[in-house]
Figure 1 (cartoon, rainbow, N blue to C red):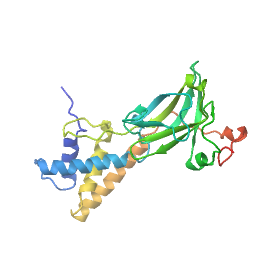
Figure 2 (figure 1 turned 45 degrees about the horizontal axis):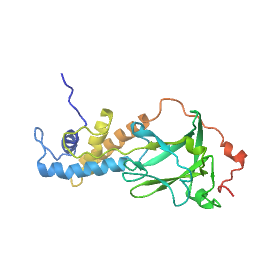
Figure 3 (figure 1 turned 90 degrees about the vertical axis):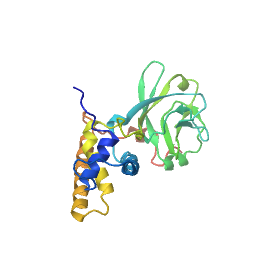
Figure 4 (figure 1 turned 180 degrees about the vertical axis):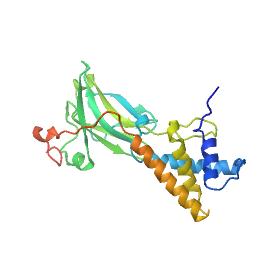
Length: 243
């Protein structure tokens, strides 16, 4: 027997309308309601992607390096029409360099302040750090040092948080695990309950917050996380960047 999919827009919207008191028992939404609440669901999904870590959206992206590319004015662009053709990721979480002998070493992020404090950004050498310039339609990635001939024999790897693709069909399977279904239902119910009796609005708001918090608490790595001192401080690094 086939298990019904509980994470289709049809299922989420129908359940959310019921929770918000906008759908009688045994009824189904009409076409206008589906169209309206599909947009609300899409906006909710887009917003939720900016909040916290979504483990199933993490991707290890390998960027083939080019000698002299990655300095000021010459970034690696991550976009549908960029150097790396892909939907614009939400963020870069960390990175490492993989050399020709398959040995890895970490590379570290630079803030805007650190990037702007660099005296020059075109010097070639071994990559030590990366800077991400977030634009509306792309992520622009710079490296310091800019890859030289030896560095270009390896690859830069960035751990990305990808986007959830917005649903366009009422019956398609959304890019969410099934355990997120109830949070999506109550999150949408909270969004669409405006104008309903206060008791319904309060219930939707409270349930949405509870289920969302439960899922964010669950969305962590199974391995323990440990922290170590930033050894760059002993290697000539300063808080404001290279001088």
